[in-house]
Amino acid sequence: MRENSRSGQAHAFRLLLVDDDRELVELLSAVLRAEGYAVDVALDGQRGLHLALTRPYDVVVVDRGLPVIDGLDLVARLRSRSVRTLALMLTAMGGVDDRIDGLDAGADDYLVKPFDLGELIARLRALCRRAAELAAVLRIGSGQLDLQQHEVVLPDGERVPLTTREFALLRALATHPETVHTRSALRRTVFHDAPSPSIVDTYVHYLRSKVGRSVVRTVQGVGYRLGAL
Image (cartoon, rainbow, N blue to C red; front, side, top):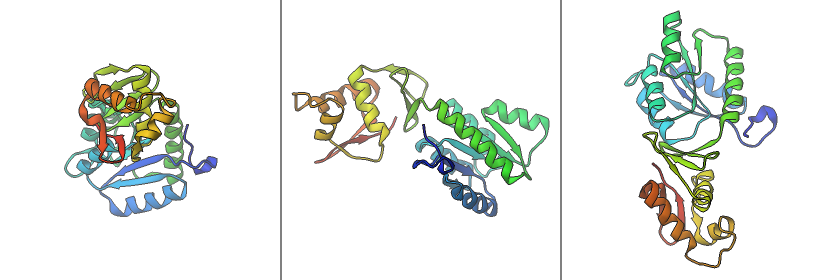
């Protein structure tokens, strides 16, 4: 379970702010980073959707009136692709029907502008606690690895069961998605120094056969890293 700096842990919760108000985004980014969060920013809905689909976040904070793709559509698209990242709507549209529309689109919380900064931070703390409790998946591009069921969840929602060794290999790659893992390191940590020198390549082949070649990337002359779905 990850904790932010208020709990003294090393790994910050990751937030994505999607809002076209540059002054507000700059203010919130500075405040939230000071609170210990890792913060990315998108100034339009299309960029926000791209980031939310390709990077792991604990919470996405989304304005409704966004350029290119509006906030409701952004959250609905995430949910349609089985992205479970918690979403907080932060918007000036505060009518009852507006709040209902936001929650029905897939938002997990709704806060109306103008807002109290302390309340926003408290709501984010609550959402991050919930995200940590629900963090039973690892992102693989637009898909996920279900850590409880040992299944890959494809972008269309289809679930693919994995064997114990297939799951262990994919989990090792997905836990450190930016790392290039050598074959010897994977053989040692995942397969406990199995005698077959080709065991890593064999199980990479099995994974690709089950869920698609793009799930594991080959780095020539080095080893493997996580791909995408």
